[in-house]
Length: 406
Image (cartoon, rainbow, N blue to C red; front, side, top):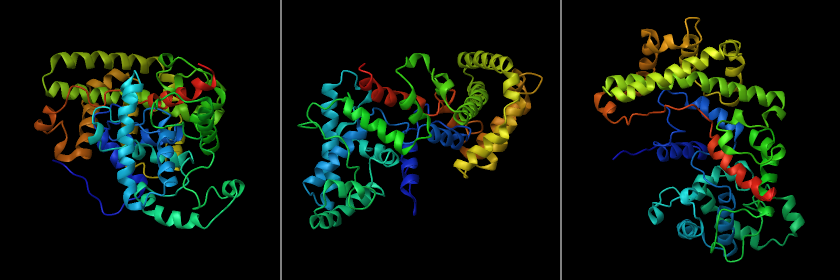
């Protein structure tokens, strides 16, 4: 059995590690070639507060409702964690009964043995959207409650005074959170009431106003998700400002070009594993990718990659030089005048891919470790990046549908 340990960490770093542990099998989180820092930097820019393991928008209210009720009852710090767990696992059973589509129910399979609770999954997003005003992680929040009760016991502010101090330690949650339904969590479901949807819309627009998330809540009407597989395919993007469109174009070009690297990596593994049928599929996919690169080569060659890297590092200085060198090396070969398909058969292109995996995984690289290769399931990160769009789109539509009466 494997385990993770660390001596010092921030709440944000801890959350990211837990996300990785939870999502080894999720297609949107596989990072075989070490481009995850680029992907996640852009995803945080477009859809702040949303992670790849969130499911439905109403969890952004379920969690504060649960904690506010525990606060109302003045449950002591030493009991809060266990009581919250009981409430969250109870919610799983209720949602399993009230929702015909259980795919959005977190913990539907694990039930009471669930390791990662919704409150932990949504904690960071609740802070990003300023629904949670407590500054810190869940453990710190639990420990703070005894002191919090002592501070509030002697205070008798009016609602206006509390609202004026909403960002201080006198409250842990935004004071305008819609009241929880009578009897909650009995009969809980994922359908937001219009007042709840409007509240989440206001929180996003206020807290992350320059994001694509906020733009789509301000400007967009309902859309067919089947016609918007990627964020740059959304029908409203022409109404974005020039800076937002430029950022989205950076993301599209990066996803388009690096898709070929992911396909080639899997083709190499298929060849090493003597998986003839899978190998043939990847060869066909690479031909389609090369044709796409050829069709859009002029735009891709004109792409201002210097501005792209500048944007990334202005948001996340930890994007490494080695990642930039790998990406630039691949893109230069893919856009060479000899054609994108050439890089998939050339020694130079294959060497670049293999050396990248070895640099990242050392002796555990599949291209050199037969045992690691045997654990390859035929598809390792072989997809075009969507920057958490699938999750963001579901949450956006959850909010927009009740506002438009759909």
